[in-house]
Length: 109
Image (cartoon, rainbow, N blue to C red; front, top):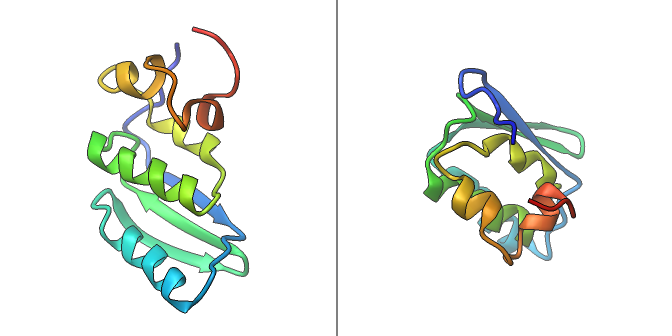
């Protein structure tokens, strides 16, 4: 299993997020603002960029990102960058869960 370097800044892309009302859009951005590992966010056109200091984020923040990306149908494959030896048991090895295939694909252990 290969882990990402925790030393490099990370930028995730939320492309073409669909909101089902003004309040839903407000909730999306409120959710982002309450994930401490996201140091800033900005956007252009249909793209929203989430900036992180590194790929070394707390488990609680990763769980929030999993839920956020799942709820708003953002490409979850990008979240694999956060896999590390400290979270591999619950994030990668423990199955079934709602995110595994969306993040890591169908490959086997």
